[in-house]
Length: 162
Ligand SMILES: [Zn+2]
Image 1 (cartoon, protein in one colour):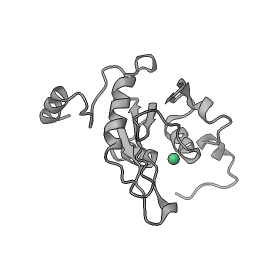
Image 2: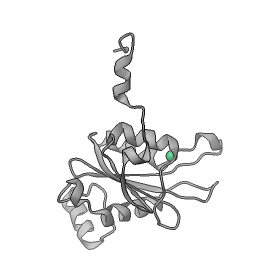
Image 3: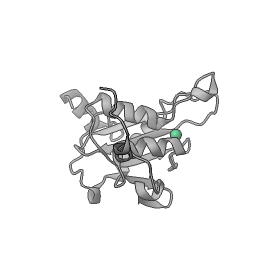
Image 4: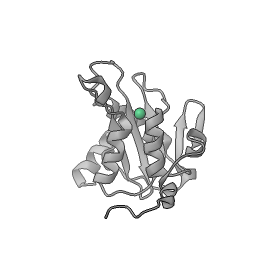
């Protein structure tokens, strides 16, 4: 984070771009900061068709916070969930594994990720990813039991294309 960003973060508790958490261990997740980041990015959503803006935020193992918002389209079926932007941001800013995730709807309250996004989160968080829900923090294994994941591809009968 630049000095200017740090100053902005110090002045405004809802300024989180590039914010680095002090401790990224699962037992010390700053859920309040993560939810605030999700609520902030939710305000950037492009949701003129549903009127249902969504914001997502996740803590990366190195302490980064990555966020995403939903982006709709006149061709409704190609709309992007907030998690799509979040995993794109994760990779665009250096990759790594997600360790804690939250998602909020228009009222700022917790939302469960949709079915497709559970698969997106599993790819980048694995079974241990902590997911904030309206009924408490649960693991990705509880959100997506018996998941199909990268390890299943080891059963391929021929090598992947380089
Ligand atoms: Zn989704």
